[in-house]
Amino acid sequence: MTVTASPIATRKPLLGLATLMTQAFRGTDLRPLAQALIDRAAADEDDAEALMDLSTALFLQGLREVGLATQAQALQVSRLYRLAAPCPPAQGRPLRLLALMMPGDLMTNVPLPFLCEGSDIELSMLYLLPGEPLPETLPPHDVVWTAVSESAASRPLLSRLEAQRARWGLRQVNRPGAILHTSRDEAWQMLHDVPGLLMPATALHERGVLQELAEGRRPLGTLLPDATWPLIIRPLDSHAGHDLEKVDTPAALAGYLAATAGEAFYLSSFIDYRGADGQFRKCRVVLVDGQAFAGHLGVSSHWMVHYLNAGMTDCPLKRQQEADFMTGFDTGFGARHAEALSRIGARFGLDYLVIDCAEMPDGRLLVFEVDPGAVVHSMDPEEMFPYKHPAMRRVRQAFRALLARQAGR
Image (cartoon, rainbow, N blue to C red; front, top):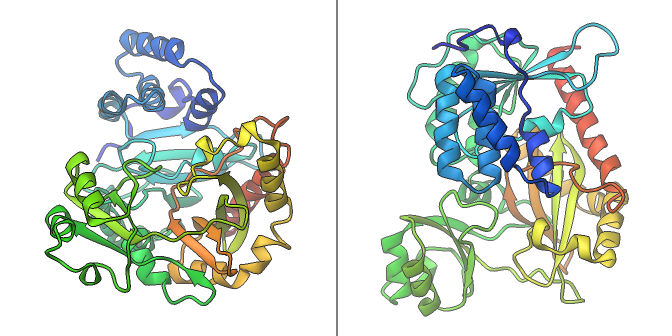
C-alpha cells in the first residue's frame, strides 16, 4: 500500500476538521472557502490537502455524497495527512500521534483534531481502505491510535487491525478488538448487570421481523427481554438522532417502517428519565485513561436531547445547570457515579471512551450510548459558556498525558 504520493513536508498544510467545524459551528459561510479549495485542486491535481479539506467542508454543509466522492479523490493522491502541532514543545520535538482511520463521513472516525488543540501533538492521519492489504510498516510515530469508530462498515477493518496489532508491535491506544464491543447491542450485553447502572435492553433486528411485530404476528418478548411499549427504534448505524423515534403502539411501528429506509434496526425500551421539573437532562462524560471528565449537559423538554437543539444558547437557566454540572463534576455527578463509570471503563478496556448518559430519579446512571468517536470540543463562545473551556482543557491535558504515558515520555 502506498502511504503517500509525495513527501508530506512539501505539501500545503491541512486546515483540518477542528478548524472547519468551528467555523461552521459559529455560523461562517463555508461556500467561499469551498470554492477556494476547488480552485486549488483545479490548479494542482495532486493537492490532496485541498481535496481533503473540501470533503470536510462539504460534509459540514450536509452534502454527504459529494463529500465522499471528493474524499475518495483525495485518497487517490495520498493516504497520509498531517496537522502540525498547534504549540511548540517545551523541549525536544512534538509528540507524534498516528491515527489509523478509514474513509467515511464525519461520524466514521474519532475527531482527534479537537483533542490536539493547544498542545504539542503532531497528528498524522493514515487512511486504510477496507479490502486493501494493511501496510507492513507504519509512518514514524510515538503512539498509534485506532481512530475508527464501530459501524457495520468498519467491523471487518477493525477485526483485521486487531489481528495485525501484534505484528506491528504497537504502542496502541484503543485496541481495535475492544472498539468492536461498542455497538449498541453489544454495549448492552457488556453493561446490563453493572450495579448502579441502567441500560435498556437493545437488539438488532431485520425489517421483516419488526414487520411481524407490528402486525401482531410476533410477541414483543421474543425480540426484547422484559420489554414493554413504548419502544425506541433507529436504523443500524444511525447517529445524532437521524430517524430515531419513539413508537407507542404496533400501529406506530408499522407507520415508522413504512416511512423509513433500512433493512436492520436497533430496538430498545423507552426509559422516562425526566426530572421532577419535567425536563430531560442528557450528559456527555469522557473517560480518559480511566478518569472521568464532564463533556457537556443538555437540558430539554423533549426526551430526545441533542445539545445543538436543546436551546442552551437561549436560556441562561439551562447554562447555569450545565455550569453546575461541569464545575462540580468531581464532587457531584462524577462522585455519585464513580463506581459505575469505573466499571464501564474496565469492561470495555478502552483508553478513551465517550459516554452519553443521564441520572435517573432513583439515582441510577442511565446509559444511552458508548462511543469513542463522539465529538468533545470547546467550540462554544467563551463569553456565553465560560465554564466549558476550562473543562475541555482538563480533557485535553488528560489526553496529552495518556499519549505521553503510552509513548514512555
